[in-house]
Image (spheres, rainbow, N blue to C red):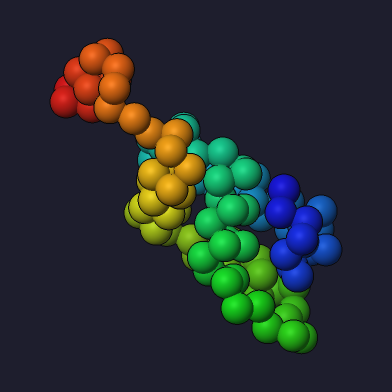
Length: 98
């Protein structure tokens, strides 16, 4: 995960909250969201400007309050930035249009 982020030191302690949020997303039919994507959303978007003296309960509250729409939008934008998403493949285009 993003250990270079200031809150990376809390990762092991907040892992159960991340897992819980991923399970919640799966219940609502979003099995494609993984822990790494949720953590990336939090560290790169939600916590873009980290607080100096944040408490663990604040980090857990942010994790548990993450909305699937925000995470999916962030993941989509990141995929475009990285070039992982192309429409060169005919099968990909047909899959998108389903």
